[in-house]
Length: 92
Image 1 (tube, rainbow, N blue to C red):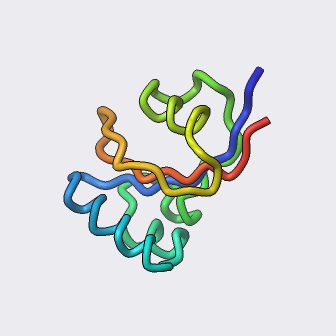
Image 2 (tube, rainbow, N blue to C red):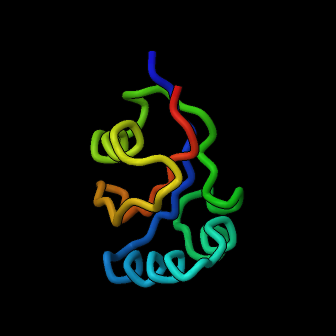
């Protein structure tokens, strides 16, 4: 069974997500921005979702984590929860 570990920042709008992504591209700290802006309880932990198995997250999120590049900020990815910026730390 595939497993991964990822960080994410959950935002209400695509515009907010794009603004945060631009800050990240300029070298802003992912964890600090997650604590300041994320709508998810994981924001308190810098956006850390810990390790999870393929299929535990909604499909759009899973696809990015299990198919996208490692350590690169992906998104915004739209789900029923909002817009995610996702950084996959590892897969095994």
